[in-house]
Picture 1 (tube, rainbow, N blue to C red):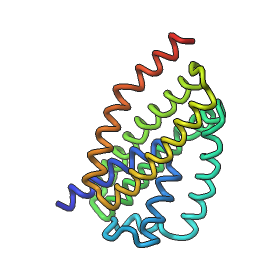
Picture 2: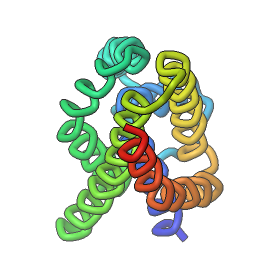
Picture 3: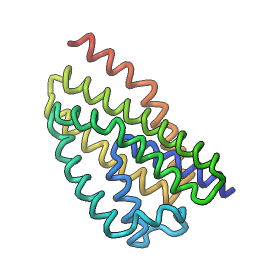
Picture 4: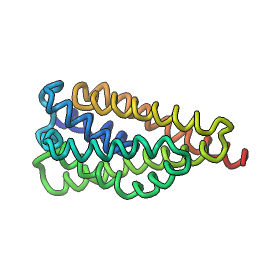
Length: 191
């Protein structure tokens, strides 16, 4: 059963890290620090330290502002194509904790791969919105706020109710895989 909860925590954290790594770290760290969750994987305790929370908070504020400005969000996403999957891989290793090295590598690959998929879906959709949306700045802010709320809720659920969060994350990941190419195609043909 412990393996099931580990995987159930890993999936949503990887998904949210691909969308907003800093908010994921901030929400999980604050949830542990403030005692909102018990029995979180021991490796995630480091996220509750004040230095980690402060750095995640500063970077979250920068991302919050960058995500609301058309085309600045695309530059930010481009830079984070490398950062988010690596961050998710590190979180995956923290979730797994002490295990055989090959399990840690497998977890890091799964976490980084899921984050790369969700990041690609987010970044591609945001480019499509910036290029083809008639209500550009309004749609940009609305989508960004929806991402922030979704990431915050799912990151919290991943450590409080991992099985529920894994189900939601699997559904969201499936929707991203199905809808992102269609949105990008719509933008291409609209352009």
